Amino acid sequence: MADYDAIIVGSGCAGAIAAYELAKADKTVLVVERGNFAGSKNMTGGRLYLHSLKEVFPNCAEEAPLERRIAHERISLMTSDASFTVDFSSNEMLKDGQDSYSVLRASLDQWLAEQAEEAGADYIYGITVEELVKDGSKVIGIRAGDDEITGEVVLLCDGANSLLAESAVGFQRPKASTLAVGIKQVIEIPASVIEDRVLAGEGEGAAWLFVGDVTKGHVGGGFMYTNKDSVSLGIVATISDLATSSTPIYQMLEDFKAHPAIKPLIKGGKVLEHSGHMVPEGGRNTMPKLVGDGVMIVGDSAMMCMNLGYMIRGMDFAIAAGMHAGRSAVEALDAGDTSAQGLAGYISALENSFVLKDLEQFKRFPHFMESTTRIFNEYPVLVRDVFNKLFVVDGSPVAPIKRSMMPLVKKIGFGKLFKDARGGMKAL
Amino acid sequence: MSELHITVNIDEYLALNKFDVDEETAHIELVENPDMTEFLKLVRVCPAGLYRISEDGKTSFDYAGCLECGTCRIACRDTIIQKWIYPSSTKGIEYRYG
Ligand SMILES: Cc1cc2nc3c(=O)[nH]c(=O)nc-3n(C[C@H](O)[C@H](O)[C@H](O)COP(=O)(O)OP(=O)(O)OC[C@H]3O[C@@H](n4cnc5c(N)ncnc54)[C@H](O)[C@@H]3O)c2cc1C
Ligand code: SF4
Image 1 (cartoon, helix red, strand yellow):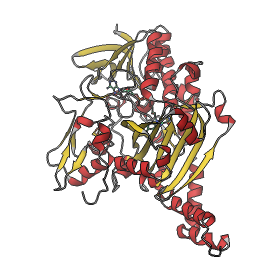
Image 2: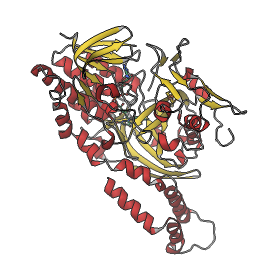
Image 3: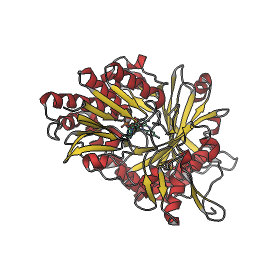
C-alpha cells in the first residue's frame, strides 16, 4: 500500500485544482509545494480567463481574490518616439463565461490551495521535491531530503522550470527558443487614479500589450495589467533571441517605463516588487508525453501555454488540465490501474477540451512569430511614419495621401507585407 | 561593458523583494573561467541582472538576488552553468504579490 493515493508536486494553478478534484472524490492526497505558501514562488502577467475556473468553482467570480474585470483590450505598436494604440471594449468581454480578470498569484494561489485543503488534501509547504522515486520505469513516489513518500500516482504540476519532467516522462530540458523569460514590476497606484488613467469604470480595468521598441525589436513584447491598486508592468521575450540583444531585459523594462506612452500611466507610482518567471511558448509541437507509468504531467511543466503576441494564456489551460488530470486520476485509482495505459483517460479528456484543441490550432504560430521579426521592428516604424504623415501639420502644403504613403510601404515591400499577412493568417 | 546598454541600478529593485538567502549553499554554480560569449547571454537574459561584467572586464555572479526563474538554466545549462537546483527548503525569493 502506498502512503497516499495521489501525490501532487507544486501548488500553482494546475496542482491545487488537481488536488481539489482528488480530495473531493475522497482520495488521499498530499500536495508538496516548495514555497512557504502557495503562490510565493509564482508570477504571471496577469489575466485569467475565468471560464475554466468557473467550471470547478461556479462562484469564483465572487469568492476568488480577483483584481479587476478586464473591460479594455489594448494593443500598442511602439517605436522609441511614437506609439499607435488600438483600444477595444465590448459587452461580450463582460458576459458570464467570457469574462476575464487581472490576478496576482500570491493571493490567487493561496485561495486555490485553501479550496483543496478544505476538500481534504494534505499540504506540506516549504519543501522541494528533489527526486521522483521509481520502481523500474514506474514512478512510485517522491523524495525530499531524507524523506520518501509513496503514492499510487504522482501528478507533476511543477511549472515552466520543471526539474523533474525528465525523470517523469523523459522530457529533456527545453530549448531556449521554446521558452520566454518574463520580467515584471508591480507598481502601486491608487485605485481611482488607475481607473482615470485607463478610462475604466469602477472595479474594471485594462489588459494592454505592446510590440516593437519595448523589446528593442527582439521577439517578444510588453504588457500592462491593471490590478485593484497597482499595475503589473512587464516584458516577455524569447530567451534564444534575447540572448543576442545589446540591451539586457531588466534595462528594457527600465526604458519601457520611461517611454512617453508609459511614463504618464505609472507617474507617482511606487515599485512594490520586481519579479521574473519563464513562459513556455513553443506550443503543441514541443509538448512532452503527458503520462507515464504512475505519473501525469500537467500545466506549464508540459508546455501547456500559448503566447500569441496579442494574448498569453496558460492559467486557464493549467486549471482545465488540473481538473481533467484530477478526475482521470480518480478513475484510474478506482480501476486499480495507474500505469500509463490506465492514466490515458487524461489525454483523451484534454483532446476533447479546448486545451489540446487550442494548442493544436495555433501550433504553427510560434514558428511564424520567430521567423517574422518585421513585426517587432519594421512594422511599428511603418505605422509611425504613416500616422506622422496623416496627423502632423506644419503648414507646408500636404501631398496627396497616395503619394506620401506609397514610398513608406515600398520601403518594406509589398511582397513581404503580403507574405507576412498570409503567414499570419495561416498560423492563426 | 561598452557594447551593452545598462543605466539602471537593478539592486534598488531587488532590495524591494522579500528574500531569505541561504548563506550556506549556492543553488547555482558556474564553471571556472566561463566562456565570455556564453556569459554575455546570461547578462542579457537574467531578469535580476545577477550576471555582471565590471569595467575592467571581470565577470561576477551572485545568487543572492535570484528569482528562481530558471532562465539561465535554459540558456546555458549545457555550457557554463554547472549546477542549477532550487534553493534549500524555505529559502530564496518569497513573492508578496506575484
Ligand atoms: C510574465 C508572464 C505573463 C503571463 N501572462 C499570462 C496571462 O496573462 N494569462 C494567462 O493565462 N497566463 C499567463 N502566463 C502563464 C501562466 O502564468 C502559467 O501558464 C501558469 O501559471 C501555469 O500554472 P502551473 O500550475 O502549470 O505552474 P505554476 O503556476 O508555475 O506552479 C508550479 C508550482 O510548482 C512549485 N514547484 C516547482 N518545483 C517544485 C518542486 N520540485 N517541489 C515542490 N514544488 C515545486 C512551484 O513553487 C509552483 O507553486 C504568464 C506567465 C508569465 C511568466
Ligand atoms: S534563475 Fe533567473 S533570476 Fe536566478 S540567476 Fe538564473 S536567470 Fe537570474
